[in-house]
Image 1 (cartoon, rainbow over the protein chains, first blue to last red):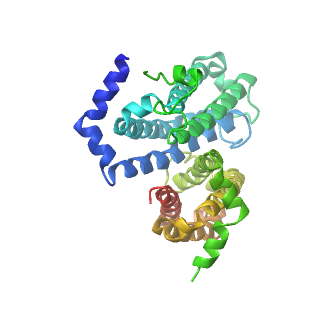
Image 2 (image 1 turned 180 degrees about the vertical axis):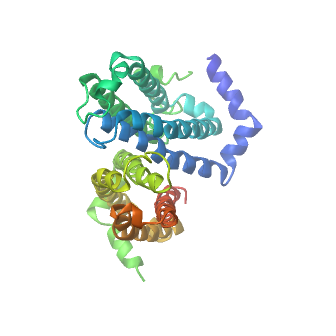
Image 3 (image 1 turned 60 degrees about the horizontal axis):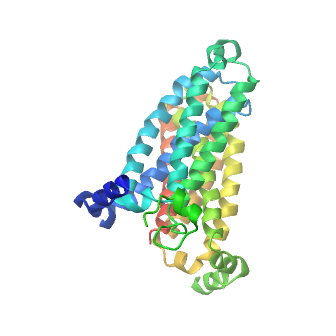
Length: 183
Length: 157
């Protein structure tokens, strides 16, 4: 309830209303979000496929990590900034949107997966398998998990636009709970 | 002139089925977006390399060959998912400036990518000047970005 009220307050701020009602700002921000998706997820997928030993087989994994990962970091910042602005334009509805909630959970899982890979034993032994086209089993697992999560994140992100489960319309008890609908 | 054809396409069975379904359009579009991410990665990896960014210690031709199946594969998924999306709202597309911009850019992007860009990426690097590489990369990024932006703006009109 507290967050609901906070989002209601945010939705009423001049900036949020301005963003929501502007003719071009929202559409431009969303276009930036989609363009950056190509750079961010596109490059993340290439790293995942290399971890699977499927593509870029003759490129050492460390090369991709040092030369491609900085670009995914830059584009991730752009993704987050544009994403936060999109949220800020429609805060209350997005807060209660089940696909948005799913996307946030999936993003946390993707971050966790990346953290586990970068801090796990397979990464410490990177020098051993760096240039080999065949990769260790746990590197493959990290790659597959990442691929599945990013695909699911794109799916859920796209579905935020739809109002099938909005609190304003009658919903099942289950949807009411996961959407945190205030009755 | 083309309007009757667009009307016929919209009233076809595929277009009608998608319009009548609540979730078919979003589902197909989600696949369209997923393929967009993959084609983005495949195009940008090589264009970045031509600009001297990213994997600059690897030969251009090797990266281009590695990226090629993903470029072609995701392009096919883009077309296979884009056609039904178009069929469901052909008349809206007919009147959409963004749609025509996208289609023009797409034709140019495909033509450019599989002729000039393919040749430059596979050529002996010592024979391709850095300036020429940059021009090819910037042309490719511009054309594909126009395709993406045009596509996103069809939805806004």
